Amino acid sequence: MSRSSSSGLSQRQLRVGEQVRHVLSDVLQRGDITDPLLETSVLSVSEVRMSPDLKIATCFIAPIGATDGDAVIKALSAHAKFIRGRVASGLRQMKYMPQFRFRIDTSFDNFSKIDALLRSPEVARDLPNPPDDDADADGAPDSGDGGGSE
Image (cartoon, rainbow, N blue to C red; front, side):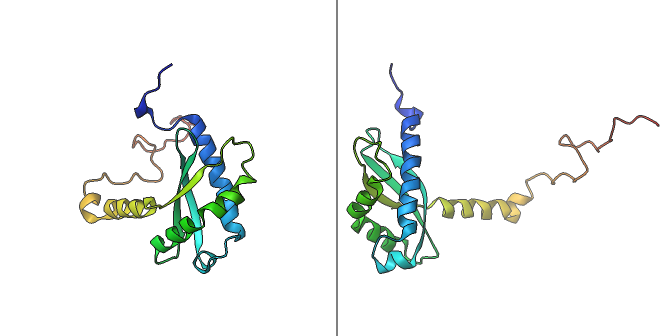
């Protein structure tokens, strides 16, 4: 039973990563961490990627409304052991409690760049005109019941 390394994350890694994300979000939402920067920041845990042995959790954090995302990541990294202890109660089924590594989530920035590109006039002129509301997906006008007479 060989696994290809190009297949991505296993089902188990995805499931455990989602469980860790939920518990970590709860810990951050409760405000258990006594750090002035973290107490005033609204944080979104967008994704948690687990290592194949489930011993390292890389957490992608999107600070909402914070100007310095790197400072938020440094503050979270400084409290990583405390966070690990708080998360442990919600993840009792795990044999080993993972180490937490925090990274800034840049996917929202990437999405906004792509959206801005798609809305630019240079790209808009190459896209087909949007279909009318009363036309079917194939472009034919809606004929109701099939075009029969009463």
